[in-house]
Amino acid sequence: GQQLNQSPQSMFIQEGEDVSMNCTSSSIFNTWLWYKQEPGEGPVLLIALYKAGELTSNGRLTAQFGITRKDSFLNISASIPSDVGIYFCAGFIQGAQKLVFGQGTRLTINP
Amino acid sequence: GAGVSQSPSNKVTEKGKDVELRCDPISGHTALYWYRQRLGQGLEFLIYFQGNSAPDKSGLPSDRFSAERTGESVSTLTIQRTQQEDSAVYLCASSTDSGGEKLFFGSGTQLSVL
Image 1 (spheres, each protein chain N blue to C red):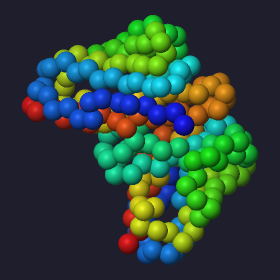
Image 2: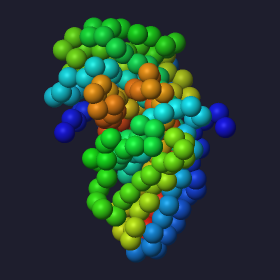
Image 3: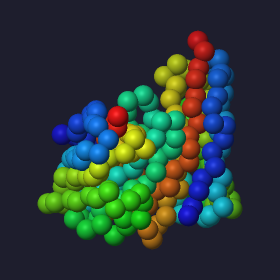
Image 4: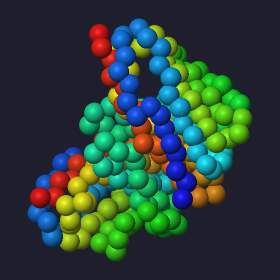
């Protein structure tokens, strides 16, 4: 089945630093999404990408849909304490109406 | 309510007992999903409902797992004869027909099998 490889698995950074994480797949996806999960909560959608090469921003977050449609990255600029959490990439399979998730990147920020 | 609601939030059970987990999706959302998240892991797809039908049950780990949805609303995930490896957070999500990729998640049920 489809698998998403997300890296890094964890990051420990200082407040104010920029963050970059990425996701690759052996399969092509129609849509790439990035979710954030905080402790005790379900994931919340951050950004959705629909076209190969698309670059989309949401505040300090920027994500890109790779031109091969097999990868995506997420950047966070000028990190703040509330950015702490687990970030998941997800690929959407149009016909199957199913989201496949990566293993997550756990972000920890030292104040 | 405004969001996806799951109950109970925590469930502790003994090995071999049956458990039922409930999900109330966002009103009007036709699609409903169940995912499992083991400690420190990603989300593992279990089952997808469109209306009251389940076109994709491919993620259910074994015949001990079953799910149903009624009234195009509430869904129940049942795990029979629970095993310790069933311990995980079970997450429910819903979405509209046209926005199928934009899932709205509940806070999950933390299941602990002793």
